Amino acid sequence: MKTQLDSFVVRSSHKQEMIDITPEVIDATRDAGLQNGLVGIFSQHTTAVLLVNEFQKALLSDFVDFLLRVVDDGLPYKHNSPEWSDCDRGNATAHLRSLLFSNCVMLPVVDGKPVLGQFQSVILAELDGPRERTLKLQFLGL
Image (cartoon, rainbow, N blue to C red; front, top):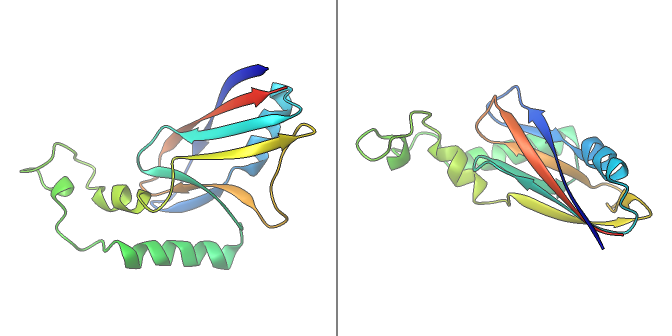
């Protein structure tokens, strides 16, 4: 059994942004030489999460609109208040929105490629950008 740890950096350009990282995951899997096993992708950030879904422009817009409805920007969050928190980013909404997702995804690898459905992509959801984000990939298999 082989294990290998790798990483790559993603740069966002907007406050909230959905970024297709599928090509990077495919390239990293190929470079790792893993033929069959698993790849776990992990976001080392509390306000940037991962998901597997369709990377389609209208749907991505719906994702952002949904997040804005579920977690209201206009509420007085303690995390944004100097009397309660030492965080100066005012990013309580990003932390709360991240609760709806996960900071990691696991994909099977077969014949050297991550297994995804016809319409599936691996997406980094940036919730507090623009920022530079580091993602870790853990490969396990043969």
